Amino acid sequence: MERVLITGITGQDGAYLAKFLLEKGYEVYGTYRRLSTPNFWRLQYLEIFDSVNLIPADLVDTTSIVEAIKISEPDEVYHLAAQSFVGASFEQPVGTGEITGLGVTRVLEAIRQINPNIRFYQASTSELYGRGNLTSLSEDTPFQPSSPYAAAKLYGYWLTRIYREGYKIFACNGILFNHESPLRGLEFVTRKISNAVAKIALGIERELRLGNLDAKRDWGYAPEYVESMWLMLQQKEPDDYVIATNETHSVKEFAEKAFDVVGLDWQENVKVDKRFFRPLDVNFLQGDYSKAKQKLGWRPKVKFDKLVKIMVKEDLDRWEKWQSGERFPWDAPNYPTETKIVTRALRV
Ligand code: NAP
Ligand code: G4F
Image (tube, rainbow, N blue to C red; front, side, top):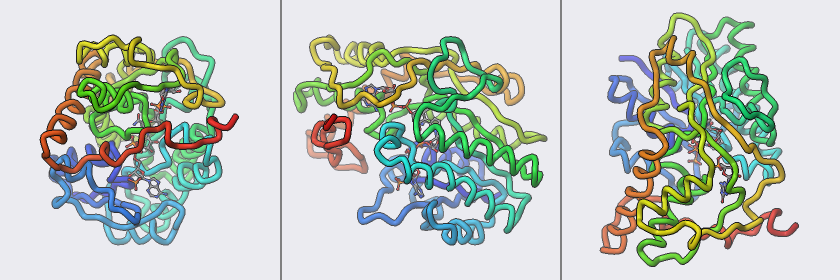
């Protein structure tokens, strides 16, 4: 049986990838952080918590990364763990560099020293392209990172290529455009919207406060995107691939469609709030997944309208169950309304 190590198994992609690889027959190991409150709700929600092996590790602690690779003896490592929220990277630029940037080197170096035959997937991102683009983006488009997060990811992107070319490690960059799902973190705009729409529809909340409504993203469906990670590591040669839907939509369109699902008018429920604007924002992202389609045989099936419906309906269903007294693993009841959180943006 093939063995796999997923860093960040408690996150959105980690949970979906673990489920996908278990179904493929892999023995799945995953790293998680020691926290004062355990955070396994996604693995429980997908009903795979008892099927995965958990190893405590933190990306700032090299020893724990080395241990994770020694314990799991993987054939493949999917490096998904990161400080993944662009907004927080402006508040914690040093930590983001340590975790999201240097963390990649720690994993690659452990692989090089312990077993250079391990295949390695790096969770690269469309944020690498940064600002100023207005056409679709491919593997050949130059990068111009516009946040501490994107700069850290650019470092990880290059380390992956350096270890591939310098040490012949089978290392791939998946340049994934935004991908969402009902397991998405509540700080990201799509889930923030779907959760608020469900609460407003049920009379639990009164309004939704958002930042830059004009930003456009190429939004796909996370369970489909994790398959592309696996496909990259099954090829003859390591390479880098864009994974996207080739469509782009604004935050405003997402909000409009989401309120449509529950028969409400978005304009009556959304307020623009300057605290949710970033010091720099990427206004346009649209991918071109031609290479992945041609070489991996991958293509997206769930597009924008369907994605919005899936997310709103699942959040609505959860809040309805919650109101009727049902209890299940879930993040939203413990998440504070974001206006309670005091950040630097609020003070300027
Ligand atoms: P996510 O839900 O935020 O999950 C991030 C994971 O990293 C969590 O398991 C988290 O653990 C873990 N982590 C954070 N800091 C860590 C540390 N210091 N040490 C060890 N683990 C740590 O992110 P995601 O959406 O699944 O994304 C997966 C990866 O793909 C990330 O690298 C992200 O940057 C990248 N990416 C995501 C997208 C997207 O649209 N989703 C697009 C392109 C690239 P806790 O559960 O303990 O917090
Ligand atoms: O949902 P977001 O926070 O995602 P963002 O910044 O695009 O990053 C996500 O996708 C990247 C891939 O391109 C990943 F690498 C990264 O890890 C993460 O998964 O914000 C999307 C857009 C931004 O332009 C933001 O300014 O929505 C805008 N926005 C408007 N109001 C908001 C809000 N974003 C958030 N989070 N909250 C708001 O209230």
